[in-house]
Length: 541
Image (cartoon, rainbow, N blue to C red):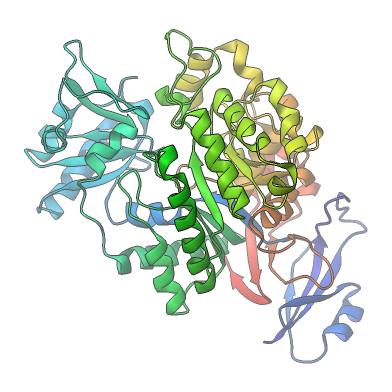
């Protein structure tokens, strides 16, 4: 492996705000390890001959970013289907569906990515989709992958009609007569999704490989595939990752979280834990560390499936709890006792509390031997904020969401009301309470570019909207803290290194095209990764 010198960079040190006037330095790498940081001449001497040299031109050099919650498999499968992501109007959605249906005349029309703000609050209609696809079965997931638009033929194949009861973990939207309209929420999607044809493993693997290279180009050197297991119309992506690993194709430090099926019962806990331990060992031995279980406790606010402590504004319901508290508590304890980390999806404040209660029931020594975390944490009651640090539970944040987007203004904020606004994405409160922070994107729900998420974590405004009202500015993070969470915080959580820039550490680095500390916060989103270094090897963006 060749040696590398990064000259004229601004090394990121978590506890020292870089000062371009005094903190520029060179970084020397040999055999994939950082061997020197300091004066250029001294670093060259430390590295020795055969040196490749990169001019960072005053750009910030950070440890590689680590995405603690991403869905490359979902993105890979989405790319094989009818892509509605980014469609800005109903006419554009219609045109894309027609084109895809014409180009794929056999059987199902499958895809997704539609923007829920383009449809009424209760979602799109099967009758509309029938005009586009005829009598063919069709299922199109929304951009959040928490709702789906089904054709009449798909509903009929799934046996969904006015007599069909809502599942415990979802909802069938209905008209005034009780007949299904064509929009399915969360667990209700599965009734149709289970009928979908499964894409070939090789095609999914090619998509994951393409996307992993895009992550690397963005400065992301490690990530967690946030759900390995068949769910929501997607297959288990484990086989695709194993395909890449067997062929030696996968670059980047991938880890996985094994899906907890939502039909699990207390009688099945022991068998599930045993199977999880066996699968984790198999995947880890193959090169995909997967000693984590993904437990989805609720849905999302926008579909009223997030579990809240108090009812939604204008509705007499508090959302959905996907697992009874007793089951979640028993499962978490059994997984932790077996050495398995638990990664919880919790959006609503009641789901967050249920997760913390389950972790609190685990003996302290057992719980602290693993790295449990709660992802998304959109709403947290003030009484629960200090419990993260007290229980050693990491807050796995998706910072790009912490601003008043069009969806938030149209759906989220009206549903929670002004009295709960202060509970939204309380990153600052968590940090001040001593909680460990990690960060991720939840891509393809939102961009995986770390600098876009960091921008929102710091400004609480959408990128490119400097005059927008910040969403809870008191919960913003200092720039250094946000970068630290996206590097050291996530790396430590996933066990893919220390996420620190220091001598003796593995050389997973990201070189930015500027020093964002030297510019205004409003311009943070303009920062780009110029070069990524993975184990000492350079990857251009």
